[in-house]
Amino acid sequence: MTYINHLAKEMNCKIVYYGPGLCGKTANLQWIFGKTKPDAKGKMISLATDTDRTLFFDFLPIDLGMIRGFKVRFHLYTVPGQVFYDASRKLVLKGADGVVFVADSQPNRIEANVESVENLETNLATMGVDLSQVPYVIQYNKRDLDGIMSIEELREQLNPRGVPEFEASAMTGEGVFETLKGLSRLVLSNLSKT
Amino acid sequence: MAEDTAFVELPDVPPQARAAAIEAALTQDADFAARLCRGASASVADAPSDADTARTFQALLEIGYLVASADGLAEQERASLAALLEAVTGSAVDHGTLTLHFMDLDEAVEALGRRERLARVAADLGDTSAVEEAVRLGALVAMGDGTLSGAELAVLVELGEHGKVAADRICELVTAAANSVKGRLAL
Image (cartoon, rainbow over all chains, first blue to last red; front, top):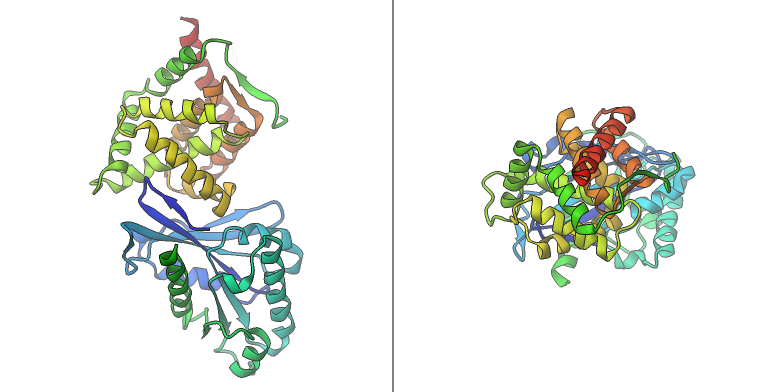
């Protein structure tokens, strides 16, 4: 749900980084925050909710320009990955304009990845939203580690719809901005249609 | 304190008298009033020359909205809030723009989260004195309907937590703001 702030002349888009615990969602946000110019971003905030913490920050991507005279501000949110925090994940997902699913490429995490994708679909469905209608990309993270699954194996289990996918190592920053740009394109394309 | 219990109840006076007393209390600090006007002007300028002032004004505006809407914001309250803010900004932002802005903020809260928005705008305020100023503004704006509820006080306390201002100090500031209005109503 993009909201327009007429006073600030901004369109505001909420982007949610989703995925299992310890897959690298926070590392993605920290990398983007660290590489964004100070005058283009707000503070990164870690907010204690009733049950856990949510991390988020907002920024104005300077190379995106304007849409119908409005700047586009992105608000990036992470969700807690642990299974226990489902209520928080639902709250954070509410109103999302786009979702990045961060998958952990390690073989022993494939089950957690699959469960998390299913959880994403279920939580969106409870809000009356079909994942196929939401700008959505998958990031295969931790590609720098040894003994990881092949992209083909991961794709088969996590990306049956063939949405845009990106290889990344959030710890080194590789693929982090490519993922965000990939999702941004989809979100902006959606915005242009409305 | 229960969130549905009023922390402040102003004397039962005609709404216009209450609005005038709140406006006078809000603008008693001439420097703050001037900054509100400058921030409002910068916010509606086609090419703001002072983006920081505009951002701070918008943060204050959002805090006022978040506090006043903590226990719901009826149409009449919206209109009163818009009228008050129009008056204290020297009409730099008109009633219609403010009404539209509140609708934008409704959507912001829906999409981005009420507590998340409070944390975000609190981060824009800066030092403790700016947070205390925002608490005072939020309290006065919330008193537009004659009371400051427990739910509204809870938002101010949470704002204080973000700005490292203790809950006791928040209560002091709210009480002082209320006394300032009551004093004007007694004249």
